[in-house]
Picture 1: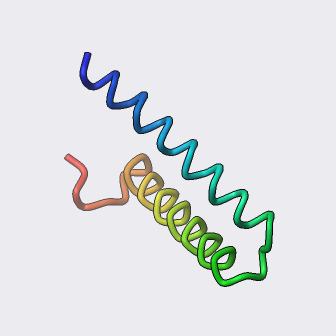
Picture 2: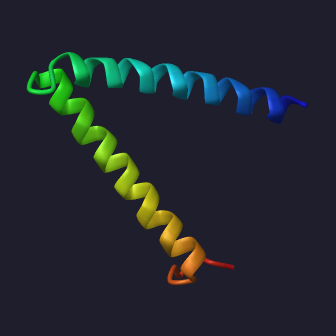
Length: 64
């Protein structure tokens, strides 16, 4: 039960943060805040894609 509530809470927090980030980028993409958010999002998604690729492709030495 708690894991379901935690998942829902994380989803709502993620949607809120994503909405605020998107609004900052759309409002002024050349501002320092807009560029910083864009770079952070690119870094996070790049890391996630790399990590998931390693995990599912079996290229990681940490796979059991």
